[in-house]
Length: 304
Image 1 (cartoon, rainbow, N blue to C red):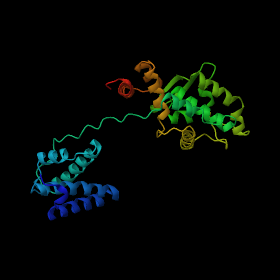
Image 2 (image 1 turned 135 degrees about the horizontal axis):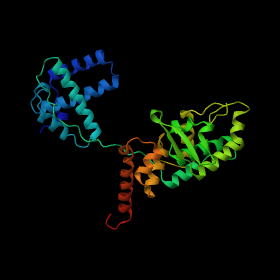
Image 3 (image 1 turned 180 degrees about the vertical axis):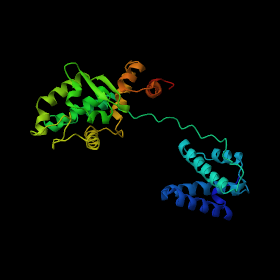
């Protein structure tokens, strides 16, 4: 098969691709980078077709499948994007009555899989929790937020929207309003309760400075902590703790679930704690646990 990199795209195909991208620009208002990506993907397929002595309009289903199979070294996500470009292009050709059927019909996208959430090791979590300077009221607040987020497996939005009345330190529970306005009770954990008691004893008052607020976690201006401000703090503390893993707003929540599963908690219990309405959402953590077993086998088994 001729090398597509040394084969020129046919002039008629170049004009057709230009017509397609011009139509996309005028009708769909796509970003310039997206249009450029479409053009590059289509030109690559056009070169492939030219090497087979065919034009884009001569393409068959086997041509499309052969082209995608030839894209060695490309990720499944990249190949899926290229197929998406071809599908859109050939829909355009059908609308322009240049073809009777699309060669992309019945061509399946590669399986992308569900990306596994990033989680920290237990030692990394410990380092992160210890990072705030708890000799200051801000540090105590931040330590309390991290302990609560990890100790109860909360979403960041759930954490920052907590009110003083939503927490029962005597019983060790927090009442949450999650997705879909669904309420649930979640145990806080001993460390989270201890740090919340410390925070509420005097440090929250220090931050409020005689202002009144129902919000549990407040800033030095007496306002509710925002999601963005909290995660700027988390990234700062991750640097202080020497954590190289790229954190996301769900990192501690994912870590909470992963560590529970690795230590023997059943999936149904984790589902209830996380507030997942469907067990299939929680089952992604079984893949993390399995991957951990694979990694341990590779590291410690003589034939791993």
